[in-house]
Length: 310
Ligand code: NCD
Image 1 (cartoon, helix red, strand yellow):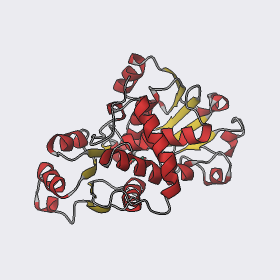
Image 2 (cartoon, rainbow, N blue to C red):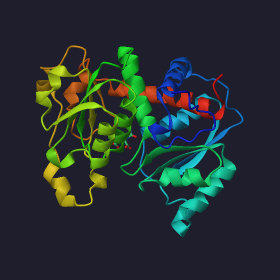
Image 3 (cartoon, rainbow, N blue to C red):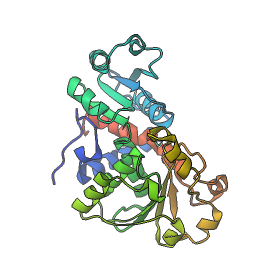
Image 4 (tube, rainbow, N blue to C red):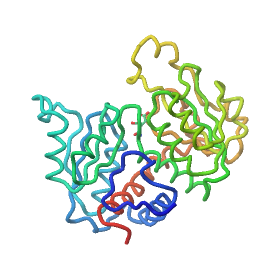
């Protein structure tokens, strides 16, 4: 597989790229770690539009920080109250406007397929920062990058993904990204939150090695990485369904007493109640490092898309 390339490319799903592209991104991100708290003036002539139709803390602010650290500027909105969408403007017209103002557009929307739709309208590259419960490719790139920074390798690891495997877009994108590597996947969720059929079909079609359990105790001793995700309450079509699974899983010190010494716990955040606060003080907890690496990773991404490889 050759390099598909980043320059001027949309980022809609991780499957728009391949393993070599990830390697280029990761080595660029290592370089960017040096500038993540200072400044590298390489995008002075560029404007990034942030179109966040759904709540966000880390994704939006790390994109914004990344652009500022690279000398670029940022425009945009979070929520639609202050935009003309509140006057009834449609998504297509909003995207057309942003396209004429900015060099790239980052979009988060509750509708699946919104980023792809935006990419079809805009000439500037569009980066998907989450579309409904479908994809969140830059989070998955960050997840892989964090794993790679922790272990120096991804092949051969045993990775558990615990939580809402049905509605979490981060899980979809992470599993897709892991399909480029030889890993063993342990999927862990309540019965009601098992992965959707499309994801299982995807894993089968890629020949991925995986199993499923509803109890993390069954697999904790085998894991190198435990990736935890909250129950995506806002995506449940039926509140009764949510009531039946709320609080169904929790990572605590008792569970970790059976973990490998070098287990790494990741979480895209926000956390609700699925990781006990006492876990934060253990050497397993890497989710704050993971969130911090969002800046250099997104600096690398913006550089590769807006400026190219060197
Ligand atoms: C995730 C998201 O928005 O999908 N958050 C994030 O971007 N870090 C995960 C979540 O909301 O649970």
